[in-house]
Amino acid sequence: MSILKVIEILSSSEISWEDAARKGVAKASKSVKHIRSVYVHEQSATVSDGAIAEFRVNLKLTFELE
Picture 1 (tube, helix red, strand yellow):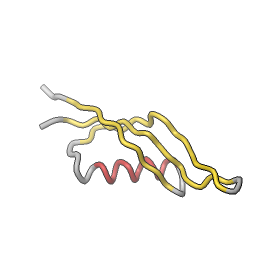
Picture 2 (picture 1 turned 30 degrees about the vertical axis):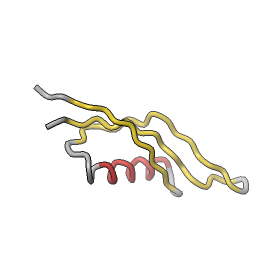
Picture 3 (picture 1 turned 60 degrees about the horizontal axis):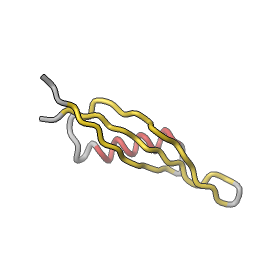
Picture 4 (picture 1 turned 120 degrees about the horizontal axis):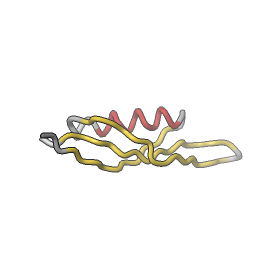
């Protein structure tokens, strides 16, 4: 039987929401093992001088406990 846990992380990127999600998963995978899935819970962005300056994502990661 597998036991799964869900954690929430925040990540950002100056390129895109997709890049922010990729960076978040890559960083989390350095300390959280057995990541099974990621769910983009929320997206937002900061604006500076009339343009998007930073893309932000709120991710929910599901991983298997050992």
